[in-house]
Amino acid sequence: WAPVAGLNDLKTIEHELRELAARHAKYGVELEHFPIMGDALLLTLERELGDKWTPEVKAAWETAYQAVREIMEPTLAAEHKLLTEYKSSDYMRPEKPHVD
Image: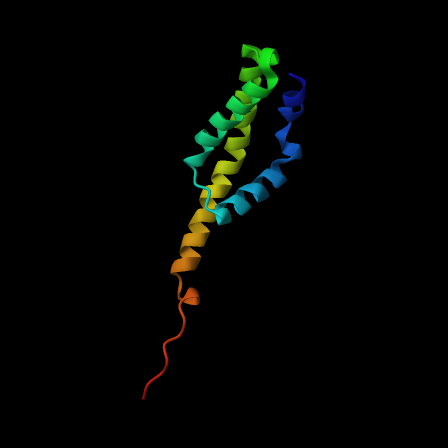
């Protein structure tokens, strides 16, 4: 299907997808949100495309979304780890007043 066909070579947008994942980690997006987002995307496309929504179109979009997930999920997980470490580090804790 033409709009999805351009996603055959995700290498061209891999950097942007990783940056998108890093930003989404800061927004609070979790790995378990990906299936929900995928379902919402497919449902929206099905409603908007109407009769043009065929099993082939659905399969193309499922494949494309899975490919995007495979790029974004590791980055999202790594960013969450970094954010957790940063928040729990001494750097984030205010210094206690020094009392003599």
